[in-house]
Length: 190
Image 1 (cartoon, rainbow, N blue to C red):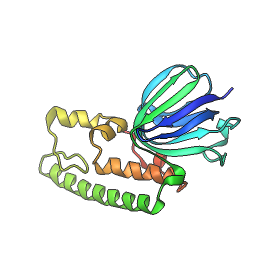
Image 2 (image 1 turned 30 degrees about the vertical axis):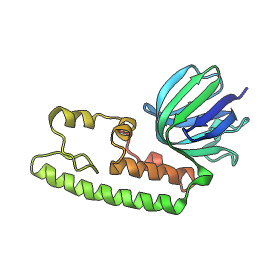
Image 3 (image 1 turned 90 degrees about the horizontal axis):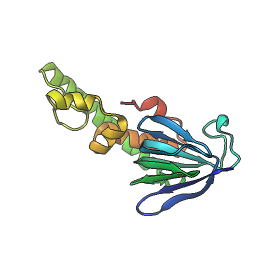
């Protein structure tokens, strides 16, 4: 028996229907929700969300079914109860609505900003400070230690304009649209 799945943003319901499984990246790592999953509540990281149609085989891989619903989700929450997976996201883009050229430009700009901020951080470290990539802010003491321990999900929530976060969002857009499996290999898990 399939599970019921919904992906909802403030603007609209992007997906509502039966699913064999739902895959996403939560704050604790990648997770798959199969039918009759135990109750669960968690934060959703910037990730590709895959919702497979009834009858799909989870062992066949990421693109085994052309009918699989794919979306770039830029954070949110997931709630699982009574054989229903509900994803609430402030921003989510279905794969078929992603502008590839815009996503490529966003990735290039974010990577350039990230490279520039890393050079600045390296210079700050050489004079005794520690910089946070992409922000121009130099945290000190406990604040610097806390930022070093933040998960990627928390970094995205707390520092949405950070160059690293912008690059992760662009990579997920490209991955959702079929531009290769970029997120796992290219996104650091903090």
